[in-house]
Each structure stands twice: as C-alpha cells, then as structure tokens.
Length: 138
Image (tube, rainbow, N blue to C red):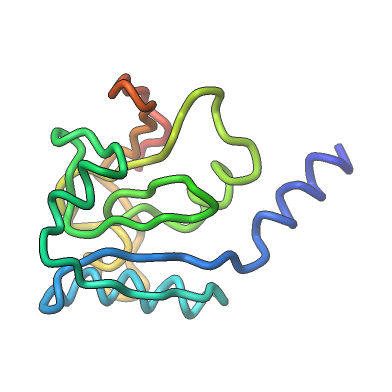
C-alpha cells in the first residue's frame, strides 16, 4: 500500500509537459492553464502541421482532438482530466503509449465552465498499433 501511494505521489509531482496545439485554440490554452494551475511546468509548441505531429507520436486518427501533450514519453491527446494522467503515469498499462479524450467533449477540462463537473465523455488508452481500451468514463 505504501509503495503504491509513494508511486502515486511521485507521479503527482509536476512533470514537464510538452503541448502541441494551434496558436489560436482557446480551449487548448484553457487546458494548459488548468495544468499550470495544478503545478505542472508546461511548454507549448505550435507546429506547422499539427496532424503530422499527432501521427508521428502515434495518436490514432479516430482518437484525435485539438491538442496533444507528451509527458515522460507518453502521449495524452485532448482534454484529459489531470487525475487520469497522474493515475496513468503512476502505473502505465502494459503496452499502452497514451490516453485520449477524443473530439472536444463539452464537459471536459478546458471545455467545461470553471468549476463544472466533468461528465459525458470517455478517456481511451491506446498502444503503438492503435489498439484501444476504455480507461475511464465521466
């Protein structure tokens, strides 16, 4: 129990987050601001071809969203709640390379009004071959 808790707490300490997004996307910036407010160091990049960046990182097209984050070599696509990212980093599912909240769910972090409950969307894990599994549901 202590080891598991220690691993979770270790993952919760701020990791460097690299975010790839469009310069003009306000909801992406809102997600970045949420992550910063939780103590994470975030560096934002505006690639010329965002879709190529997503493809190069292994994000299946069907899971696409408006921004992509990379933390410790893992890929996080879209408006994923911080708690799912922390949980994933503390104990990555075997073979999985990341998580995605496909599309732009209206009640997800960065999309929902401040203080609103996150709901009505799914977070999907995926591997390098595009195999997907439900990770969490809101």
